[in-house]
Image (spheres, helix red, strand yellow):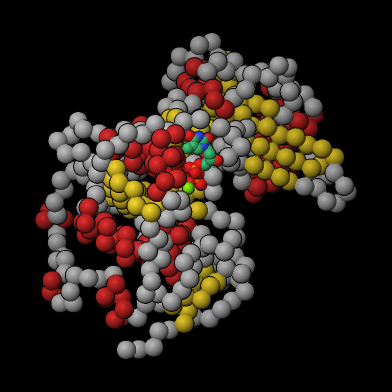
Length: 461
Ligand code: TYD
Ligand code: MG
């Protein structure tokens, strides 16, 4: 048997390197390479590929016509927002990673999903669920289940951390859905690496994916997102699993946003909204005005924008604050939007609108802990910063949507009609947008200002 090769795996991006570097050559993270023992050919065969060794037994190459296109029978979880994130339900044979910071509600959500699935009787065969809890005891899980009022008859709980034993139980009970909470705490005793290390994480995950694929079982694994902690981050298993969803925001808000960042069975990156209550997570199918706030008096630096979150429009509040800074050390801090994007917007404001911001600290925030990556909110950020800078409030209920180019031009954004419709439904009074064309939806009296350049928008303030 060949000697196992010593390699180094980045716990951020998952790249493998033949020697150790202080900084990962692929993703640039410092101190992220950990020693990793690549499975040798033989070991791989016994652990992952249990189907035998004759290559002739393997899958055959097929033409597209020969491939069965019978529609995937998704298992609806009965929790609308969770189904939405997954693109309509859990796909048998798929592996889903649910990530998030500790205490954000991963176990609560999955126990609720397990409870609803395990309780259903309307289909001919109820859906059996095995909930593997590797962090809490079975008793703790039962207490939590009682707290959130579950009465699932087809739900089994297993408190175990050894993957061999977990798979033994799984093969014995053959559940339709296996939930592993969390993947970082389970280990394979035959690997030399410590539980929680990248080697364990990757190999355990591979083995679960292999089990899911060969038996058409849906597997959901929980992974903690750690801030440079000792446990390997879930990033390195993202490419192994089919679907990745992350809890966003922080645990100081009562609502939770769950975003799908990868889905091999769905087209859009959907977002689900939940609220953490005394008895578990409650789904919020219409977030509506959840993220906007009626201010008692007009405040400078605050206005509304409408962002696409998956296929849904969310009306959000953008807030900016500028304050004079120590000379030469201006800070730019953002929350919910990209720092780079804000720097670009500041540069455009300086250059095209003659606004002196270089000596100011600038803070930009999306209220409610929502994260927005689309450039369609550029205009709202620019106007919020401008309003804060000149210290003049924007009229209450003003919405701004539009992408901003480096020349200060305002560009059209996708789904503008849908955004305006949602904003008018929530009572926005005026909208500053790029030219919209002839088909304007009915807007409940919301005034529209079409602009082509950022200067025009500032004049409209
Ligand atoms: P948990 O699901 O354990 O988080 P994770 O698995 O992501 O680490 O939930 C954590 C928090 O949620 C915990 O601080 C308590 C709170 N919580 C409620 O507010 N209501 C509830 O019904 C439950 C079960 C938890
Ligand atoms: Mg947990």
